Amino acid sequence: MKKHNFSAGPCILPQSVLQKASEAILNFNDLDLSLVEISHRSKDFVDVMENAKSLSLELLGLQNKGYKALFLQGGASMEFLRVANNLLEKKAAYLNTGTWANKAIKEAKLYGELIEVASSKDNNFNYIPKNYTIPSEVDYFHCTSNNTIFGTQINQFPKTDVVKVCDMSSDIFSRQMDFSQFDLIYAGAQKNMGPAGTTLIIIKEEILGKVSRVIPSMLDYQVHISKDSMFNTPAVFPVYVSMLTLEWLKDLGGISAIEKINNQKAALLYSEIDRNTLFKGFVADKEDRSKMNATFNLIDDSFSETFNNLWKEAGINGLNGHRSVGGYRASMYNALPLESVQVLVNIMKELERKA
Ligand SMILES: *Cc1c(COP(=O)(O)O)cnc(C)c1O
Image 1: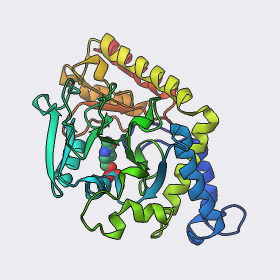
Image 2: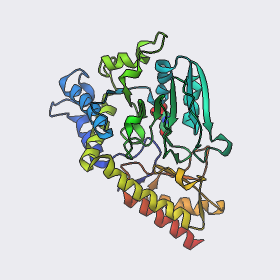
Image 3: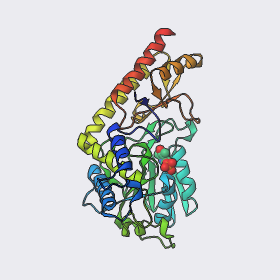
Image 4: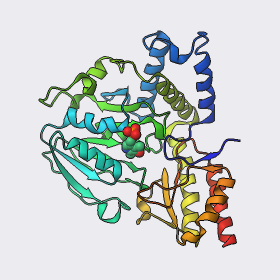
């Protein structure tokens, strides 16, 4: 039986998607060829790429609004520098909410002056800073919507007239919002969309072409847009599986439908973390809690061996917290069923009975 997979990334994908993907590895579209051995310029694969791009824009409500979707390689980490290379002329403003934001800041500093508008570093990133100001003269503002490692999530994005960039690697397609408030969104596929190996980038085209530096082709969003994500060979398998996951999401009713389930999963787990006398949540303020990655600790570490045995016996995978936080992290991405969260909650109750 399939495990209850709480892995933070690469993470659980819908079983029906894995089934279709495994069939395409052997015989894609009845071509009597594998998906991974045909030309990326063949009609069959070009259709996959076009479908993946248009589904992305459709699900986010960004069709016909001046946005282009790209599927590129290098992970979200590549976008840390590609964003700065394409947009940073003099100064940029960054919100520092954890490890990934930090890494984005480090890369962008290679290209210009950085202003850290706020940081939650003082408390090991267990909250989302609020009430900061974004200087009007910056080239862009960058934030991370969901902090995969620390388990915080931005609920109120700042209103600003400057170009707004967001790393949505770990919560894209998980909740409704006005995505048109952003000018550039990027997300590594392996958290909520597909296998590792491709990154979805959504860009409002009008923000490009404004920096004076010469941008190497592979870093240049305009080059990738003009070549429809085919400037070089795309990651055919990750793009195909991402397309299947986006189709799965559309069939389910889109982001608003999955958001309801994600809210149920988060409510179920957080209410148990709050109720159970053996556990405490890592995030300081309940309104900053991530619905994708719930971080929590045992109050008394002497129960950890019993707890670890219980969840492993129950078929749970991937519950250990990140090394910088410790404790536990339950990642509840789109494809994780509510029943898996129920199994975890039952284990937490069982531990309390045994204690
Ligand atoms: C995982 C993650 C990254 C890094 O993604 P890679 O594809 O490994 O480069 C960046 N940002 C966030 C928010 C993440 O969760």
